[in-house]
Length: 74
Image (cartoon, rainbow, N blue to C red):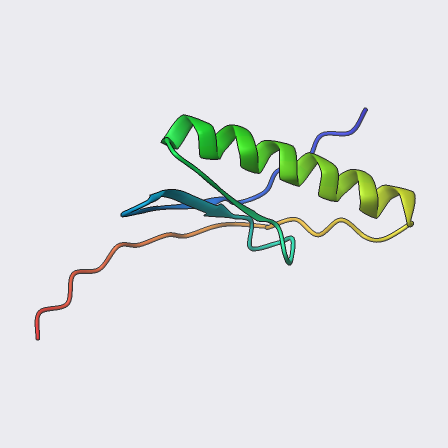
């Protein structure tokens, strides 16, 4: 069994949480709570990886991740 590491971005919105994995195009989900969205994105990533393995596709991974939150006053 192989292990992979991916970056996951989680954003809070008015209707819950949204998460996506930048390395895996089309890999995104939502959830009512932070815990829900983390569980959902884990499942989505797992299925995405399984599909790539079955079809012989490369599994891209991030070498490093930097995330910054900026406040811009206008």
